[in-house]
Length: 113
Image (cartoon, rainbow, N blue to C red; front, top):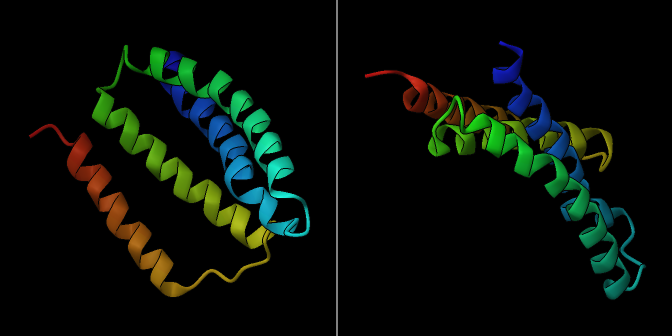
């Protein structure tokens, strides 16, 4: 059971790093773009150290489509928390409705038909 949940944990850690790599620099708009790119690449390297094992281990239990779906849901959750807590942006009702629709897609993908 733990081995099946390990990809979810690793993908969550991976997404935290990638969210900072992609969006963390938005709080540092005065920094030179080339510096932001280099820092983002460094963070992305750490992200890959979790993402690659997550998919390798996860593929023992999940299809590639299921892994991608898990990753997208985790990304939305991590990004939502990040945007509210780190970027201090509002979370609007339509974001929630959109996320619920994506979760419905997860059900469709994971359901054995």
